[in-house]
Length: 72
Image (cartoon, rainbow, N blue to C red):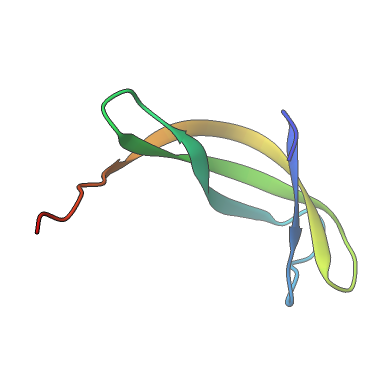
Protein backbone atom coordinates (compact mmCIF):
# COMPACT_ATOMS: atom_id res chain seq x y z
CA UNK A 1 0.00 0.00 0.00
CA UNK A 2 1.21 3.48 -0.83
CA UNK A 3 -0.35 6.94 -0.91
CA UNK A 4 -1.77 6.31 -4.38
CA UNK A 5 -2.19 2.59 -4.79
CA UNK A 6 -2.62 -0.90 -3.42
CA UNK A 7 -1.31 -4.29 -4.48
CA UNK A 8 -3.63 -7.16 -3.51
CA UNK A 9 -3.56 -10.93 -3.87
CA UNK A 10 -6.58 -11.96 -5.88
CA UNK A 11 -7.61 -15.35 -7.27
CA UNK A 12 -10.08 -14.06 -9.89
CA UNK A 13 -8.62 -10.71 -10.87
CA UNK A 14 -10.74 -8.28 -12.88
CA UNK A 15 -9.46 -6.90 -16.19
CA UNK A 16 -7.11 -3.90 -16.20
CA UNK A 17 -9.20 -0.74 -16.58
CA UNK A 18 -11.96 -2.13 -14.36
CA UNK A 19 -12.98 -0.19 -11.27
CA UNK A 20 -13.69 -1.63 -7.84
CA UNK A 21 -14.43 -0.58 -4.28
CA UNK A 22 -11.97 -1.64 -1.59
CA UNK A 23 -12.25 -1.47 2.22
CA UNK A 24 -9.22 -2.01 4.48
CA UNK A 25 -9.32 -2.20 8.29
CA UNK A 26 -6.93 0.49 9.52
CA UNK A 27 -4.50 -0.42 12.32
CA UNK A 28 -4.96 2.87 14.23
CA UNK A 29 -8.06 3.92 16.12
CA UNK A 30 -9.43 7.24 17.35
CA UNK A 31 -8.81 8.43 20.91
CA UNK A 32 -12.22 7.13 22.00
CA UNK A 33 -11.36 3.61 20.80
CA UNK A 34 -13.36 3.83 17.58
CA UNK A 35 -11.73 1.71 14.87
CA UNK A 36 -11.21 3.09 11.35
CA UNK A 37 -11.34 1.63 7.86
CA UNK A 38 -10.01 3.02 4.62
CA UNK A 39 -12.64 2.92 1.87
CA UNK A 40 -11.43 3.56 -1.69
CA UNK A 41 -12.64 3.55 -5.28
CA UNK A 42 -9.79 2.14 -7.36
CA UNK A 43 -8.89 1.34 -10.95
CA UNK A 44 -7.16 -1.95 -11.84
CA UNK A 45 -3.87 -0.97 -13.47
CA UNK A 46 -2.34 -4.43 -13.89
CA UNK A 47 -2.85 -8.05 -12.96
CA UNK A 48 -0.75 -11.17 -12.71
CA UNK A 49 -1.63 -14.79 -11.95
CA UNK A 50 -2.37 -14.04 -8.29
CA UNK A 51 -2.18 -10.25 -7.76
CA UNK A 52 -3.63 -6.95 -8.93
CA UNK A 53 -2.29 -3.41 -8.81
CA UNK A 54 -4.88 -0.75 -7.98
CA UNK A 55 -4.64 3.03 -8.36
CA UNK A 56 -6.84 4.80 -5.82
CA UNK A 57 -9.07 7.37 -7.51
CA UNK A 58 -10.71 8.57 -4.30
CA UNK A 59 -10.59 7.50 -0.69
CA UNK A 60 -11.88 8.31 2.77
CA UNK A 61 -11.61 7.02 6.30
CA UNK A 62 -14.79 5.77 7.93
CA UNK A 63 -15.49 4.62 11.45
CA UNK A 64 -16.19 0.95 12.20
CA UNK A 65 -17.62 1.39 15.69
CA UNK A 66 -16.08 0.91 19.10
CA UNK A 67 -14.87 -2.28 20.76
CA UNK A 68 -16.10 -2.87 24.26
CA UNK A 69 -14.39 -5.13 26.75
CA UNK A 70 -16.59 -7.95 28.02
CA UNK A 71 -17.43 -7.63 31.69
CA UNK A 72 -17.23 -10.68 33.89
